Length: 438
Image (cartoon, rainbow, N blue to C red):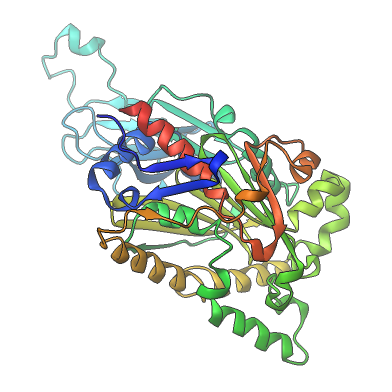
């Protein structure tokens, strides 16, 4: 069935619109799940979640139960969590460490690499030679790969190599990982929450600067109050400086395959990495070191967000229905960070993120507001995709050139411009793949 005309993309005429059915049509949602979550590279975990031999982590991808496992030699595997005998789930805990996984139904056993190591009473089973010739291992996903500790899987073999899929967006993953010579780790703990709205609302919002001052006034007022308090140590200051926003610059890059990044210059001295700036310059060069101290909101389509602003946050998006989405949020941090900087990072993270923070609840309430508003059936087209269109540079602008990257589009300007063309990469890729899947 052809894709209905839901993306109105006419750059020569200064027009880019998205139809509201993209967020509310159940048939389009089902096609999205087949196209992007069952047939696409999808982020499934971070290597630091399974650090030791025989560690495992269970998850779901496009509704299918999977297990990330690290075998005794330290190699990573991603397999379907379904016994080859009668289909029962083999691994039930969220995470743990086991050399052997035994199916509770009929006792078939598997090693930490997914290989079948025992079939209960096999010698007495009267099995045929044909049965013996079959593979009894847990089935690996069609494709599984790692980039700098970030783990991706695909249920379809028909995907490009992971590094090709990530393209120049890898530069910004590198910036996160290279904050410390030893790389990144997940701070222990995570938060999972849901909202009654479409999954792409979260994907858009992370790169939406336009909403910040109107959606998060309580957070901004808190920062202003803290700034007036005497004797507050630098460790308590946030990266955001609301009163200086109009003086700052921002920009965006739209990449192939739906990836996108928004960047903003902010006061470097309030960044947890600022004390390490000389060492960073020596290790990664002046340009990349300065970029590491900018705020950066990176989307890796379809489900991974790496937000370097109030701290370093990783969000994983799991669509549950056309109007219901689950988010799991983690705090990332450089391995070996000093206790003082780790404290600053965690306090900034707690201020801004998660349902207990001062920003995430504003956002999720607004997503639900949007989803309810989409019920206005006589209104078909969204008008929220054209800020910044006059400033679009096809290919690399000066900011991209200094990083040696070639995005599809580049934009830069004042913070008040609050570019919306960064969403175009998402919906151009979305429309292309959805049409091809038809």
